[in-house]
Length: 164
Image (tube, rainbow, N blue to C red; front, side, top):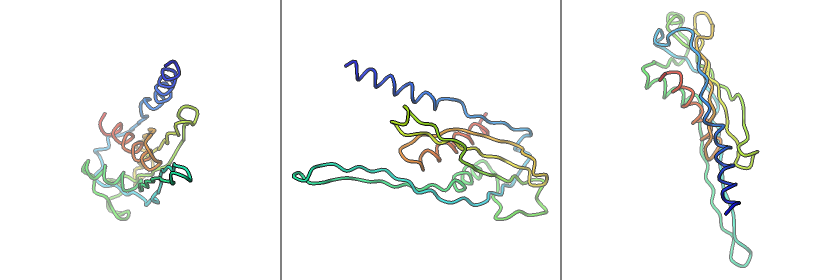
């Protein structure tokens, strides 16, 4: 019983690192912009699986794979917020356009790495006319796979910036 309580308390302490608030900064209101240009990102395929059994009972197992393309997640969120996504930069719309960049900025072990790790992402919004940073947001995500981690981190970041 003591071991179970210790394991549960360690799990709660380890997960508490994810409860930190996302970091979001904006120097001008983002509603000054109507358009976004998001350079393409590569899709990430991740998976998890297990095997079990013995030679006498037979070997069994299962696996799951998931894919996430960060640009697609960001695009969907911003389109839902009313931004029009441009397929390329338009010189006549630069003053109303944000260039949105994505990057993975950190990985943090959960329970010393025993429960995996969380992935932190950072998203920057640049004014297309000046290339000045208008807003930046960072958050961590933790899920069943790396694809889940990234999706959760991106959405947490964007929500913190747009739903303040």
